[in-house]
Length: 552
Image (cartoon, rainbow, N blue to C red; front, side, top):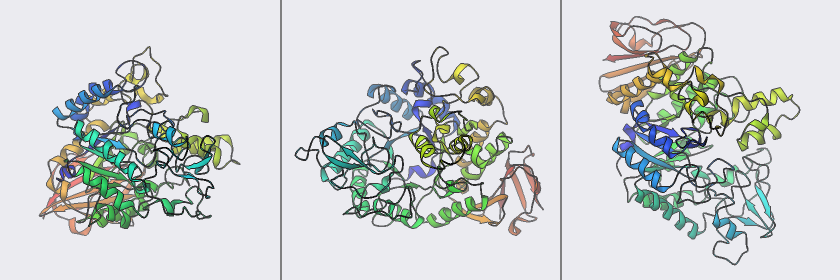
C-alpha cells in the first residue's frame, strides 16, 4: 500500500450544510459538484465526506439505514459518481465515512433482528434479557427495551443507534461487502467512525460507578478482538490503493500505536482528541478557560510519540466540535486568531484536515432556546447536567459546546441565506447572523483574508520537504502565551511562532536561532518578508504568527 496520504491535505464536507444545488434548503451532491473548483483552488488534495447514506437523521447521518446508497436529500448514486469522477479529474482523492459500530434502528437488519431469535439477523445486534449498568454517550442508559423482541438492545450512542454485534462473522462479512461496494465505485479510502469501540468485552460486566456517562468505557474501548476484526477489514482495503483513518475517542498514544504500527497495524492514521480538550473534557463536559500549556503538551506528545513509527492526523475543527476561533482564539481578534490558528497546526508533521467554513473563520452560533438546537447530544446534555443552574447559564454551556455550531450553513456570500441556498428556500438550519461580514466571496478578493492565508499555508507545505516530512522540535514548552516549534530536515529549519493571547507579549528567540540569518516567510501581522540577521523578535502583537526559514 502506498503512502500518498502523507503529502496530502483534506477538506471535510458535512454535506447537509455545505451547498444546496437543487433549491430545497438542504445541502446536496449537486451543490458539492458546483463547488469542486473552489475546493481544489483552496490547495487541498482530497475530500472527506461525512455520511451521505440514507438515514433517519437521529444523529444526522451517523445512524445509517442503508450502507450502499445515497440519502435522497443529497442525490443518488449516479450523482455521486459524477462528483467522484469530477473530483478525480481535478486531482482530488475522495474518502467516505464508514460507520460500523452501530446502524439506525430503521435499518432492515435491525427490523428483522427485533422480530425474534430464530431469523438470520437475530444476532446482528447485541441483545440481553437483563441489561448491565452502562450509560450511553448520548441518551441515558445504554440499553433500550424492545417490546417486539422482549429484550434489551445495546446502544453506546443514541437510542436510535443500536450497536452491531461484530462478534458475529456474518456482520463482519457485511462490512467487507460495504467496503468493496464503495472501493469498486472508485472511492479512495475511509474515515472509520469510533472504530475502537466495535469489539465489546465478553460477559458485559457492570461499568465503573465513578465514571458517569462513560462507566462502560473500559469494556467497549479497544475490546478483546479489536485488532483481529480491523485486520480483517484491512485485508480488503489492501487489495485496493485505499487509505484508512480511524476515529479513536479516548484513545491514548500507546493504544493508537497498536492500530498504526507493528504486526497488528490496521489503520494508516488515527484521529485523537487530546489537543481538543485544552478547554473542556470531550467538548461537551467540564468547560474551563483555554490552557495553551495543555494544548502544547498534547500536540508534542503525539508529534514525538508517532515520529518514525506512524503518521499524525492534524485538525482543529470537524462536525463534532464547535468553531475553533470561538474556543481557542478570539472573536474580537477574529482575523488575527483565525490566521494564527491555521499557522499553529498546518505546519506540524502529519496530514491536515480542514473543515468546511474553517478556512473563512466561521464562528459559533448563539440560539435563544434549547429547542432551536438540532443536535441530540446538545439536547441531552442540557437536560442531564447542571439542572440547578439558571436557564441562561445552561444555554451558555450549550453555546460553547454544541456540535450545531459546526453545522450551520456554509457562508458563501452576503446574499440571503449566505448563498447556501436560493433566496426563496428555507435553510434546514439557522444561518449565523455574521454571514454578511464572514463569507467566501468577501474574502476571495482580500489578500489579507483568512481564506487567502490558508491558501498560502497549504502552498508552503506543498513546496517544502521540510514542512512535509521534517522532524518536529518544541521550544519553550512552559510559555503560557506562545507556541513555538521547529521543523527540520537536513540543513533547512523552519521556526513557527504563534501567540495565543490578546495581549502584547515579549518574546525571545530560542538560543539556537539567536543572531542567525533567517528569512521571515510568513506573517499574519503585516511584517515585510525578507532575509535578515535575526537578533530577537521583540514583542508579539495579539494572536500574531510568524514563520522563519533558516539554513544551518
